[in-house]
Image (tube, rainbow, N blue to C red; front, side, top):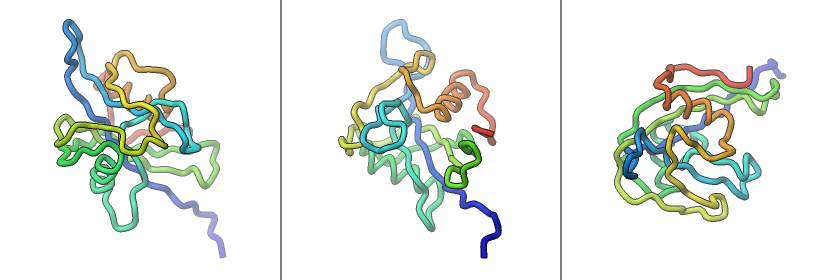
Length: 157
């Protein structure tokens, strides 16, 4: 018996941030990956680490696990940014809740661990992002840039 309910898919995203090391540059940089071979938003820039929250795992735990699995960093000092409820045209499979975090300190040098899924890893100024960026992630990056992030965000409604 179906109740017309949908299943919400949770995911965690990590935006590593640093002050720009370039002379004369102002503002923070974010580490982004160029997606490839995933079947979702390939050839788009995205959070350096992100993935589904697994059963019995908190979003914080998922963020730490994904950062280790995807870019080989650990001991992240995570700061919660926003929870984003998103959909795509009301398709039940696309009801999502995304938990976004930043980290300004971690252990290890970020590197591509999954080359079949990541074509490039690049530090980008928050005020000059490459194109294209995954649309719902761009919303959060823009809120980080402008200092307007709120605890709850929606996308696609």
